[in-house]
Image (cartoon, rainbow, N blue to C red):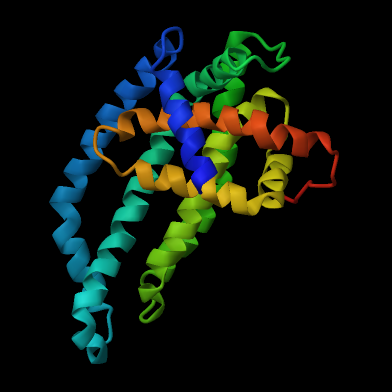
Length: 247
């Protein structure tokens, strides 16, 4: 996780530097609008949602209210902010693709992407839909598990692992997409270095909860993903291992 935090810190510093700030203006504005909507919905519905979930807890576990209530609150907040993150990334995906490419150039590398800007933007949006097709069914299963008495006590921990994995997929993918790495192969690369992948995803998942800082964490995570690609995953990809996995 320490490597992921260091990469994220460098990524945030990069996106705030001259020459790269223009790539984050629109994503930050999108972040602000959706963040305000998410907070409003949570404030209005949190109490009633908690009451519904508590009604599913067996009565014989009532003496564990001190533990159950925080766990259920976490199980509610994580998917809410996870959904918020997915929506921001879907809308901002074309800008993030350009940002990842600009960060690589700043670091002295870069992709050999011959696509036009318009084609890149369209492909980035399609790639984001591909991610959603992978994430949403698994997210739905995990959300449904939260309504199963007994099992719902473990869903906060499952959400944490799932969030770390998906944040890694989300932000490590932009640089890989720029280098023509297919979505299945990208998942194979991340699985091959799963400890590093989960560490990076956990670093993003934790910092995205910090108010105000989270406005720059998302573009910073895109930049950090480009850093991680150059430092780790590009070499792994070049090894030519059989890392293809089924969709």
